[in-house]
Length: 217
Image (cartoon, rainbow, N blue to C red; front, side):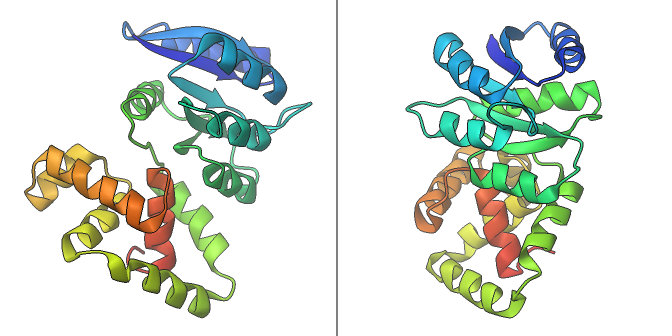
């Protein structure tokens, strides 16, 4: 059973999310929070596997709450749910350690899948929106940033680089294994090496590295 904490300052949104999650036999809502401060306390109390996190909330916003939650020992996966009003805020949330983000109008089956993927230690990216965020962030001084980003990738093997490209395209390990004709265990090993070599803590940061280097468009 995957335990989930719902964090949103709108009770109606939390109720809607709870109703969606209750349709799945393998998911259980263990708590709710109406602001970031309450979310941090609820994580300590309930120890959820996954947190669905809104960004704009009173007292402590989702950005600060995500950073605090992810800095703890054995933290839950955090998925940011947003209306995409501010892509800068979304990017900051990813840098704070969120495993990905989804729009609030994401179809229920995709939301359930995202929770399962996050609980398994993978990331759920919305590829089109992810590209909008990353392209905006990398637009400034692109030449210098791309040169520096490419230099970071020089330590990678050709196979690790291939895996990084697929991660940048938002593909999960099983999909990468099939495309590159590898076992899923081998792909997981390559991903672990990528984390170490690129000093990344989650797959979203790997995707950002790929976009910054220009190996994914």
